[in-house]
Amino acid sequence: MSLKATINYSPSFNTKKRPKKRIKFLIFHYTGMRREKRAIQRLTNIQSEVASHYLIKNNGKIVIFVPDLYVAWHAGISVWKKYNFLNEHSIGIEISNPGHQFGYKKFSSIQINSLIKLTKFLIKKYKINKRNILGHSDVAPLRKKDPGEKFPWEYLAKKKVGYWHNLSKSKLIKVRNKKCNKILKNKFYTYLFKIGYSKKYKKLNHKCVIKAFQRRFRPQLVNGIIDQECLLISKNLA
Ligand SMILES: [Zn+2]
Image 1 (cartoon, rainbow, N blue to C red):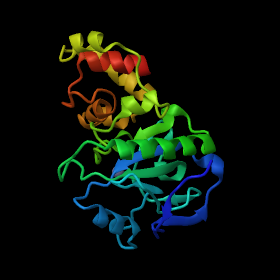
Image 2 (cartoon, rainbow, N blue to C red):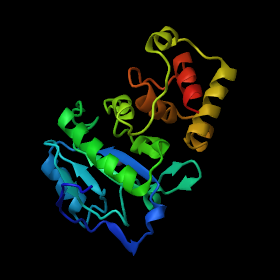
Image 3 (spheres, protein in one colour):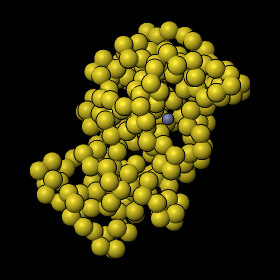
Image 4 (cartoon, rainbow, N blue to C red):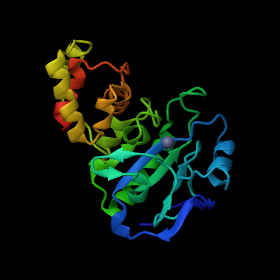
């Protein structure tokens, strides 16, 4: 299988090549800029020191900035499970979208179809585990919101990109906004750590990790409050 893409190399990567087996994660981002053209300039500019491996443009076309076997600078300071600094172990994929700051919009089906093609290609090539397909906000929840609650994780899971819970929507909606006591909240965190989120965010007593979880797995309501729906979903996924 080959991939149809155009090449526009970025200087923002480590010059030392990594072995193929070190690639274990795919990390999704949105570009978070008003204009796609500016986003491409930023991702290929030497001063910006940021680049992903791939970009999915608004028209669905794929651009390669950095070849897979080089570490691109896309995730920054990041943690997931026992992994620190995810850049070393991941391939970064940007999807064109203005993001929360500039009028966050729905990802188009042409973008998502293209993303599915690209990720299936990479999953096969590097034998990526479905649980290792992550959003930037999962690995850096204090700093990042991307790809955000409009990113169609559930749909992607149906297409075998990533994973989702198997709970019924009618069951879940009944417990949305139902309060959790301290014991249940602690349980939620236990599940969260099992899923892969870093323990340090609980210690910081920060809502960001709850929001990151919600953006990812309960996108209908991102409020940073642990309710019984969050608890059920996290238990199902852990
Ligand atoms: Zn990002």
